[in-house]
Image (cartoon, rainbow, N blue to C red):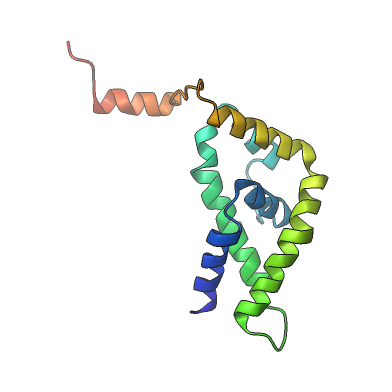
Length: 141
């Protein structure tokens, strides 16, 4: 298995929790940000579906890049051993420290997750989706 496949598999197995992915996003921010992460989290109250679509994909991509860039630094170890050691560091030190440093963001994320998982929550499609649906299935005359 090459490094790219190894990293992707590691992200899917060990960094699949949305809280871990947010910590990776905060610890390894993208070079260019159009919207601040605080704004992105606040928008989740209105568009919670982004959490499982665009945000998850973006944050997983950031995690893959970070693991590929920093996960293979241990000399004398196999790629798997080096990556496992780095994942241990992330899980035991970096992610908990990131959560503590950005507690309000993680509390907001937890609120969005609670709302999203609530049985009495109805997610309304955004206006662009409603417009597209009207074009696809116009009401009969």
